[in-house]
Image 1 (cartoon, rainbow, N blue to C red):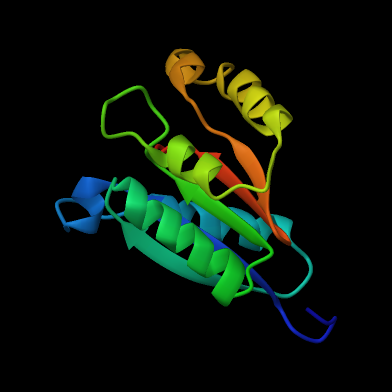
Image 2: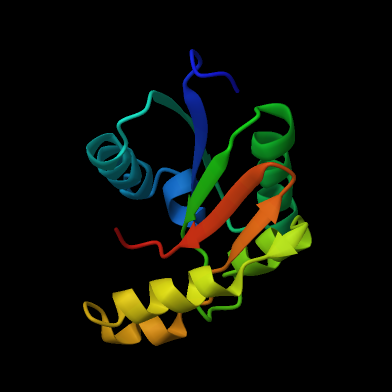
Length: 139
């Protein structure tokens, strides 16, 4: 990426129901709004909405990091303890390096607002030149 091109940021909602249209996705709009408020450098979102399927999550993360050239990918959803919550497993499967501090810090901050945050299994990893961070499904 050169300084004239916007940074590519992948925003991925992982939810069976949102991907099927059962309810409107709130994750990508919330992330888009937050990034717009905090980033001063030019950036462009590359968005995906997919079900809680590990193989599809892995493929999406690989595509965003390797083919799309995203420098950051933020996922929302699939980090809880339910059997279909497989976002952390998929993220770890595509990782070159694991960054344990991301999950620890996000849980610590989230606990101030949501008592069930301790159940979140979100992770942060590096894949090639891309930082991938899992966020909970509720904005």
